[in-house]
Image (tube, rainbow, N blue to C red; front, top):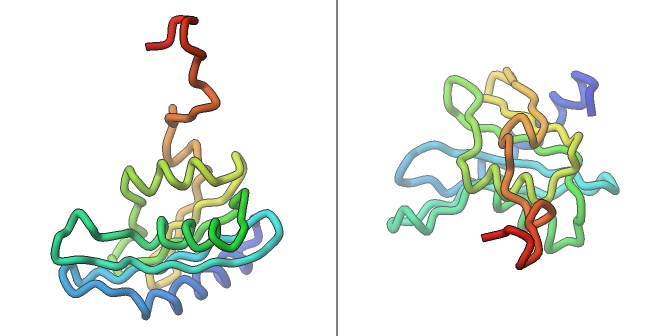
Length: 142
């Protein structure tokens, strides 16, 4: 996904789903759309909770819905918020994105004016924690 028109269409989908966000505490409504390796789409919104630690971000909800639907590799993710500038995913979301994103996946961060920035998973979370790099016990791993 590199075509500007495709990116803007994905942003529009995330803007539309964002309307279903539950954000009575922060007032910041976010929507996310995931595209998987087969072109299937999954949506997510942020769902807040009075116990803030139980709040779940739109990105993680979109990825969870995609996994539930059989996704194994994410090729694109668009995240939209009503903030002035495109908002960056939190650390937990970055880790979840890294777990399921193809190395060349496009992570699109946008606002309601359709201003956006595009990253790769490595650009969002350099030096990611991954079990692929974990060493076997006895070979110097802690």
